[in-house]
Amino acid sequence: MRLSELTYILETMYDFKIWERGRKRDVIYARKVWCQLAHKMGFGPTAMMRAVNNNAFKHDIMLHHKKTFSVVNTIDLHHYNACIDYFNLPVNKINSINELIYGAELTEVIKDLSELSRKDLKYFREDWIPKFKKKLEMEEKLNKM
Image (cartoon, rainbow, N blue to C red):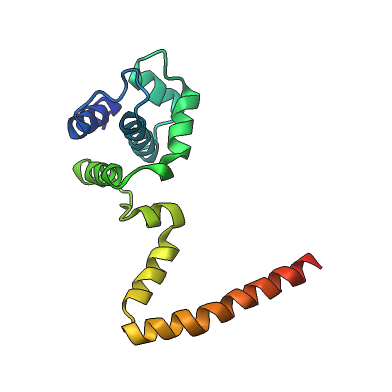
């Protein structure tokens, strides 16, 4: 798999050139998707910079886009997951923005909560969450002592 193929596929999905000069949000987010996928495929920032073949994009920009991937929109996650499917990458898909930001733990909690009845969910929210928050506050106070 070459980075030129990744560029072609993403530019087809986004319907614009992702490495031409521009600072629109859609373009920036497309670059973040490209950098994240390139990193997952094993390419380093220098190899990414060479593949782009544009003097305006140095390796520090490649690192920045990879590290700030968590700000992308839902459509960008869709393109990210589509590329994983298209290239058969051995990478886990990201199903939601929450999963991207908070990780799989929150996704599991949400799944567990969504299986509760309305009555049980109300009970949990009104009774257990306040107790849990108080416990966390007390532990924090103790840790500060």
